Image 1 (cartoon, rainbow, N blue to C red):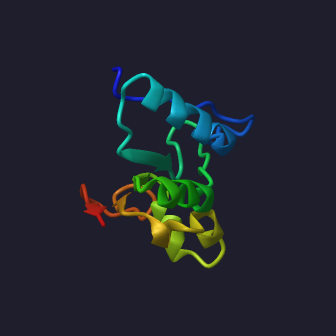
Image 2 (cartoon, one colour):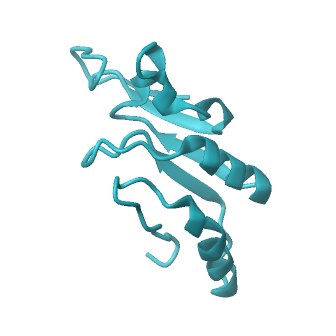
Length: 113
């Protein structure tokens, strides 16, 4: 459990990117070596999409792996209307999308990109 740092969220349950630097530095001070940041696209429980572009900026500045958990709604990237929710995802190192969720595929189908 010590290897995972939970970040606070805002009123819309999106990751508070203003806390990233502080928590990163705290992890270093605690003797931990951060290697990755995981953003939600969206959180299954709340439907909230984290600000991917801001997460990517942070990860680039710290040479961290950026993974976007888009299992539930990452398929929004295929929608003209909703693809803005995924702005910046092209900068992620990895992305997961479950086709059996929002794409309505009839069998368990997961893509790890």
